[in-house]
Length: 271
Image: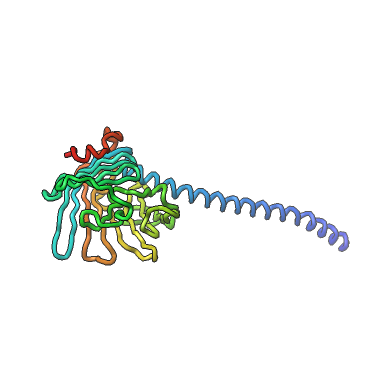
């Protein structure tokens, strides 16, 4: 009797082993497939989040009236401006105050950027070497204002983590510049609001992976028919006692603009 039971047990075990092997292989296949799909979706989602953020922050076209306040230990200076933009390729900024800078304009057409100085009645084409220089004496660079680089196309994106930032659920995105792109930063971290896809915070890191400055977005409310941060504060890490504040006083999206508006001739005429 015992041999018979033992025989049956061995047979059952022999039959079970292939079944267990199949189940394990199936589970492993599902696990690796899930891992692959998750990784693919994460990479895809990161790019989609950045693209959606750009659509919200920029719009197809826009018009804005802004005041930039440059705060230094010994003085404070205000610069008022008007700005028009069409997608990522076209933008025009007109300085309206102070009087000494009134009429100064900055024009971007695709990868070319010009600066018109009314005092000398001269239009200057800005070389790439000037993009990292200070804009109007502020903590912003020329590239920050006219955006020669593209957040969508010129970086690799990934989601670092998710967290609550100032009461808002946010993705923390890491952006690494692609090779041969005209970008001074070695890395950029961006906090993106999950509900409205607006920027909440940006940290720029140099090539040594040291944080260079921080851009914080606040006074979030309805503006231009959408939820938008009306105030941006840029603070350099090497000079924490100084900062530059940009405040939107008026903002309109999807305005009637076309490429013919963004010309060197219009730089001189626009008021």
